[in-house]
Image (cartoon, rainbow, N blue to C red):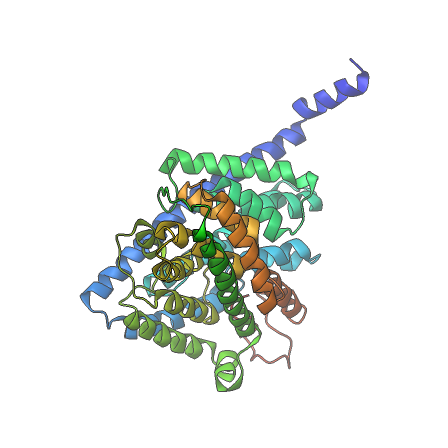
Length: 459
């Protein structure tokens, strides 16, 4: 055997530094998977608590939701700056920036802790938010902290551990390992680098095993066996793709616009009195909750699953009302993600479409609606159809889901040329040049002494 080959084998298997890196990666992935599971359990308990309050009186959110969102925004801005919004734009920004201080500020363990606490509180008080985007930032923060602890190189930290932490977060949150890998490549990095692929795969596998060991092998939305015959029923692919892309593009434009600042008096209130603005958003959410028979609160997981199983009742306007509730929740400036709410909106639209297409299986159309709208929001077609397939364990619909997601993504780009997470991350980086997250702005930059910098909602 050549001497160089022996050296490579010895370096690969007997290098203390390599084994330290492996142990850090494996331990970090287990930690990410465990925290994602605990976060999921906490979010479910928050949902149960909310619905207990609503069952006592459907009018309670008129008081609880405005007060709760105001408190959530106050705590976020004062104690956990950098935790607002989904978390995915922050991770993308951390991958792109060369500013170590900014990267450490948005991927700190303090921000990760705030993301968990305030997101769960937001779910308790009725915000229409998800936990998956926050889990991405939490996973990336854990891996980033471990990388700094053992002094990994910048390349490994930025392109390896951060991406791996985000991917592991998606995989563990949804029990969708393939979607975690695809999302990291397609959305967070927007490119595939051979150097980081092994790190991502390892983190996703270990986080997935952790989830399987605790929760077992389960599809997020349960098993579905819906199929779409290769006949006139394929019209649903066109309708769900074009319609989902249109609705998703409009939603993305709304979120991006709110992150830049709303026009008129609403924008003035958003900039000058963010806590009062959050209370106003809470009042709007409470009204939407009343109009929807309390179905627009929370992640939307139970509503989407009931639509898929065909054994639940949601209002005819559920898709539209949930879309508005999600946009308002995001604009309020509290931490919270878009994944679960977007899938719930898509399920609502799919149900509407199935009612005007009796020749297509309703269960299949609902799945197409979910993939179409989600692809329209994130403009990541591969992630969209993969995540729906893994969440429902339905491989018979692979081709219709692919076609729907591709059509939806293309349609969405006509409405919103820049993908939502890319636009939000660019806005986040632009604002960071004026004042870093967590630092008080310089004199004359628009904030009073002692106040946190103005971080636009949805960052």
